[in-house]
Image (cartoon, rainbow, N blue to C red; front, side, top):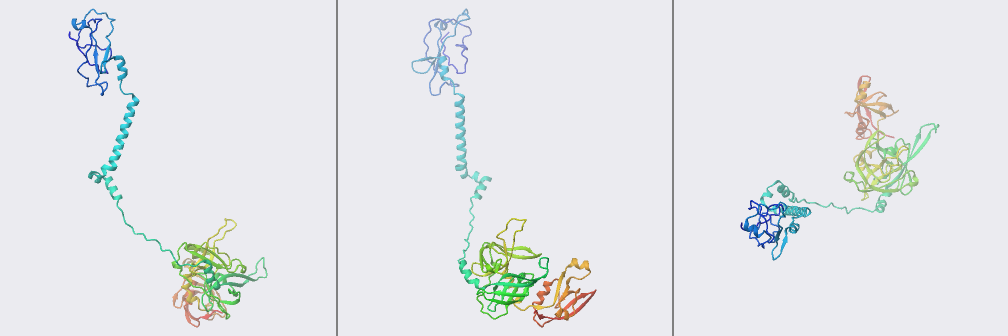
Length: 474
């Protein structure tokens, strides 16, 4: 039998036969012929892809010639294998296996991680740099979203115009303060537990001069019920005054000086409709007492149309954080141009059950005054009644029509002379339907002293038409 060289697969068991073509075991000679390198390389499992590695077996010359011995002892030893590593040296197969054993598990995991990172990086790079340039990507939903997101909508933005007008606070005070006055009102005080004999009470407020004739604007609640009114001018001069007219619904009143004096100053009225939140304002008035006359406080406009209920009446106010206290009522709220844009009227005050409240004051918009200035500048006309509104619900309960219930008639007044009595319900005034006292006063203020108006009243189930001549209120 010819010598046969075999290639040893790395995965082949060491106990496998050295010669797979021999069908019987043959005895080996102690003298072993030298082994020559094989010409073939196992392409299925090479030991090292970078080396030309060959494996040879040494077989005995006897085996190659005799073809083997069937009587070989069972305990014979397997021939030693050698691996040719190139060059002139052979390495025993046992040591060769140790050296040519495959990658370790850690090495394989590291290679896998590197490949994963490389693949991910390549995918990201392709997504960001290659795919966006292809038509396939541009036609996809993602491409359309990115395309729409990259559109630039040109919007023209104009910077707000900064007001160059404006005066410093000292300049405003110098301009307006000469027109601000202190209003002192004396009224009869009703008897009470602490004052059983009654007497007089004195209160103060603020006002401002409107024109060269000396007309003064203030709050109605400042002069309400007053029997004697005096005005202290900026110069310190005290002058008697009287109520020309008033609008109780809007808490407005206009006074006139009863003496001929030099007018120290007058105000300029602004436009409260153009007022903006955040504008600077100052208030001038007489808080608490006449000792603090001419006090100046400053702040901003906190709100331009704040609805507030005061004494069961609803008002639309300008809100400001400029300090407003008792005695400031009727004083001017002034903008940065020195124009009066409001009449200080009220504030929210704290009570014993609440914490301290500061910086919430209110002023009547000046446009309310300017819209009524023609009427309020004329002498107040007298009808001579005190009335109460009858609404639909009250009318049904009392079997009366909607109108004005007469609760008091002044002696020798136009109403008394025209035979209007307590308990009558006025339903028409000057030929127009009236449902409230305010509506009647609005119609009256359009007339002049000496005008004769028709009045329809309801009395004990019958309607009567009466005539009434208006006179100036003394």
